[in-house]
Image 1: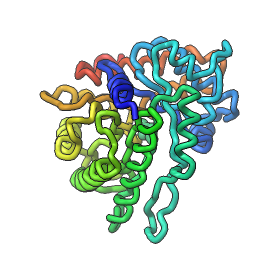
Image 2: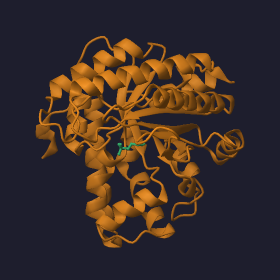
Image 3: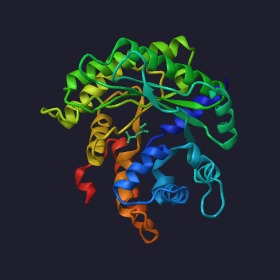
Length: 337
Ligand code: 13P
């Protein structure tokens, strides 16, 4: 393991003023999102769509790294430059999603386990050759009646730690993503309880698997009220509870925490990140690794039309600028105009 290189990549991923663009939707997910807007999903339309982000001015300025899907890491920009090289030329680290999805966890109705460890060592070696310098693995924890179970949290944390150790062996920084879903009606208290238990187990498993904490980036959910919870916590409360949980369970050796947006509105995801970055004495960098909260407005503005690529790029650039400000605690809602 080249610990100096890993530390350097991890610090670059969470560099001041910058955050990560998650553009690693599987074919199924991106097709669903395209279809909802009447956009055709083909290899070429997905390539055009992703190039719209990578070529935008805001990408070079505010994005430290992009998480790609297997198809995209093998595609090229319109000028023929392979995407990993294209990103690198613009000072952006290429990343790659390496899990193979969350499947039903046997014996645990309603719960999931993320798969993808078989053959992962070989796949990581190939991704490194293709230019990948960081990776992502998403574990999913569902809150519901009597769930999550201990077995689900342990199995997912173990998978994340095994993945993280394999990444570091290959010279790739693992994004460790345990996502407690915001679907349902649960309160922010319940979200905090489950996020606490999850992070506690994740860092215990990372330690057991001898993962270098200085060479990982954590990608957690925020501590937040569920989408259908009648009492929605304020921006201040989400920020306070999230930082409280992180302080309790995330060692200061971790260089940075890059949140997922998880179904929050664009502006809520920005406002929450900003409120956290206004707090004093945070031991880690706090930034974004948003998918939907960076892409939704851009996808709509583009609409699959060649003549709207510039409008899509501008919609993305706006959100990237807003989140860059939030990442430094300098966002104001008046900047949205
Ligand atoms: P969202 O920000 O849309 O939750 O996506 C981030 C991500 O990469 C989920 O794995």
